[in-house]
Image 1 (cartoon, helix red, strand yellow):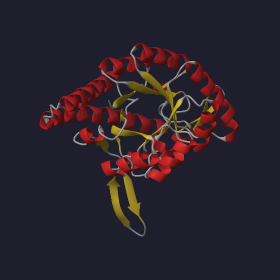
Image 2 (cartoon, rainbow, N blue to C red):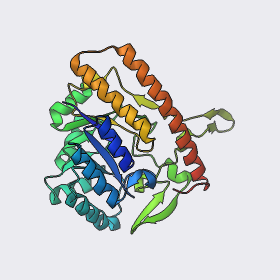
Image 3 (cartoon, rainbow, N blue to C red):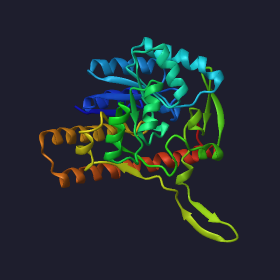
Length: 314
């Protein structure tokens, strides 16, 4: 059976997604997971999330998507020791050196190579598997045949995003936000760079501002760079035959919205398994959810843009 993985931006969200039918949940480790700190979990939150997950018969994955400096590696490993001692089921990582380091220390913990690794082919997938990853999050641009090839040749588990956003850059590799605004703060002893998700802070989404292309003259103005909603539906029955995990993004959205999204996909997966595929019916339901999700994302984006200008603190 394919795994349905849902976001956990708070312990309330962790509880809600399991009630809605998720098999597992991922939660950001505060200061380390490329989100505003309010959508990450501190140590006590991680402990509570693990308890909820295990009481629900599911798993908790801890996301550590920030790239540490050399000086931060001992601090990171202390955090990994804590997560392991509290029975976190898996770690989501995007640095191959850190993957190797953790695999050597804890050979029994599940490691997932993050979407930020931008894995596009079976040789890259094999590289991360040999570094220590049990599963990779495949790039959104890969089609079913490419996913099959990775599965067959790299011999690694595959996770795919079914409800997320595309990006005009490679996911996890964009530095635009830090050019727009960068403010160093501290979370405990860790430096937390607001405006640089690559160093653990939030992205201010500058690609969604109005842009102008000019040289000797203005060639175009008032346009956004591509950053669109990425929803899969028709593709899911085929994916269920190939991949191991279907992932929903959305730690920063409301608990009620994420509960509905998870419930929708759980119901759709059940319908696929039972052979009850009324695609027009499911498509209409998804579009209603997409409209709500777009409205919430717009509000969050405006908040982030104001934050970049110093009007709000994250």
